[in-house]
Length: 419
Ligand code: LLP
Image (cartoon, rainbow, N blue to C red; front, side, top):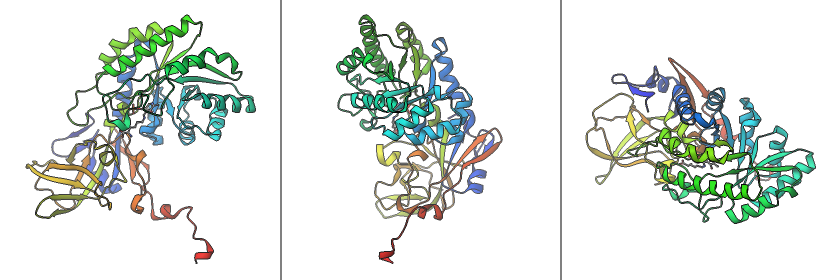
């Protein structure tokens, strides 16, 4: 995480001391580096320059308007998954012709909104969905373009809950069904089925499953061509992994070098949908130590952020490195680092060697929290969702205010009969 560094003993994000932000904004808070976001985006763009793909940032990883706008300004499009993400993508002036929309459960309202916005592609996940888009497009007198999301039935080496490309999962359409749909595509008067989409899972650190799946789909595209079915787009999804702990880094240049010849041969315009790769290591969650507790068997370091702020350790047993904002030497004393939520699953680390000198008031950074962090936060235990900060150079900007207690009761009504 090159934009988060000790200089020499204080953690900096770019040229801003992280502790200065924590003291001014309060904790917990997410901090993102603008420079990291841009450099990850450009790394991908450069690696694939030979085929000039449309890179649609997967907003589900981080939908903060300032983060999305940073990428849109660099030429990114958006991969959306709901009407809410469409609204946000449009709010930061994403070119609708750079928006692709995947979801197994698009509602009539969401389809209408997307048709009215004139998005590039609906990534369609079932035959009934395609028929629904056709029906709504006829009703509105709009034309739509669609890609069929193929489920290539390839297993990716990642957590089961973030594997998507096998037939045990709800995503996409199997090859046989997809072939049938494409053979009959002329029957749709308003929806032009012009592409193939795939996404096999997330946090995949080896290029192998991508290569296997893309090659499989490329063969399918060849078969379609032989049947006289012409397409325009091949959307290869996202899923490129990042380093949380000691994973081998996913080398995009190496992946690009291996796969570009296969992609070129399809003759189609390539789209990709990275989320985590762009923003995962561009963000941290800053928290403050509240108490240290020793029950004779175990030690616990209790901090002021909880699973409602960052659910990844609780939900996927995910590893996040945790470091102090002010460098100290870490003595090998194992503790659980836990939050204040009333659940045993509310932890950030289990039996992690923690510096023995840690004390109430110390600030800690939970690293690699820029993807699937704030977006998955909740108000569980009536906790306010925390602030988000964007750093650029030697300045920082609060890009989302911390919620207030007023936000917690907004929209709630106690009916008269109880009063
Ligand atoms: N495209 C589609 C259709 C997706 O479903 C996803 C992620 C992406 C792109 C972006 O994947 P990425 O490049 O970020 O790996 N909450 C989980 C991850 C869920 C991923 C959902 N889909 C986590 O915290 O690990």
